[in-house]
Image 1 (cartoon, rainbow, N blue to C red):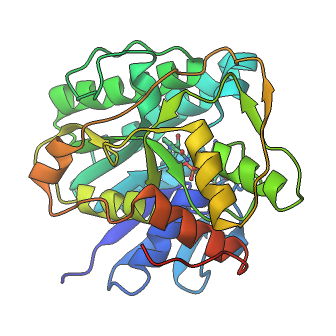
Image 2: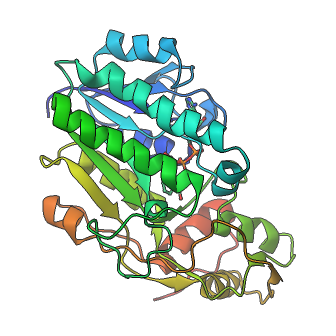
Length: 313
Ligand SMILES: NC(=O)c1ccc[n+]([C@@H]2O[C@H](COP(=O)([O-])OP(=O)(O)OC[C@H]3O[C@@H](n4cnc5c(N)ncnc54)[C@H](O)[C@@H]3O)[C@@H](O)[C@H]2O)c1
């Protein structure tokens, strides 16, 4: 394997640190841009990477990209919270659109660049009910977060068209796994409540469904995406649909508990159902998701607490 320079923006975060972990044994030189707003240095092996602590919107980040001349960029740094995006739309757009554009612009004329991998989201499909959603399905975001990620994709398509920038935009389904901080995703919030013997909060009736994908599978997809030769968008998912109530049932079962949820009103911007077809990415790569929700939850809860009941499937 030849040695390349790989830049991961947001490399100190939940998904980025997993990508770094998978690449740590490779011959590649690894670089990170991260402002540590949600990520942490403790998530990464500092001896193995060069970390530039700066904002993706800054000139400093632009100059850093120009200076290191990466072969590959995996762009993960973002404002990721849907509710924050509703309350602070300009802040969300500033990071997710202008920050992304700054990194794209820094890459445009780099002769070295072989691929720009972008973390997009199922939120670009909004409440599209035409399940399973394919890359051809209509994009009708119901949140500023979905909108800002869609604009990031569109800038990549445009830059590919105008200046030939090769890219793969990966639309992730709902990602879960071990996190070093209490994030707002449903599995982390259930875990936080369940371990304190408290009722997990469900917004709405709990019958809304999601396509949950384990972080390890996402990290592997991001690495495979570096070598995809056809620029465009790709769904990264399990193509399985599970209700929020069923997630709670599985977690209760794995913990040998039976704690009921506390149900609150549905939140603005939340999607009712989601399932993404993944055959386009599977067709273009050797990737397939390795984890079912049950095995992924077992691994997650095993990391979080060793009291999980390990079962024979
Ligand atoms: N977690 C999910 O379920 C999910 C689903 C779909 C898409 N995504 C996308 O995957 C990517 C990674 O998400 P994550 O879950 O690891 O989030 P995360 O918050 O753990 O990681 C984001 C990282 O980016 C850094 N960052 C944030 N704003 C920055 C800025 N302005 N400049 C520089 N660094 C900045 C943070 O410090 C953090 O280390 C994001 O682009 C997100 O939109 C995540």
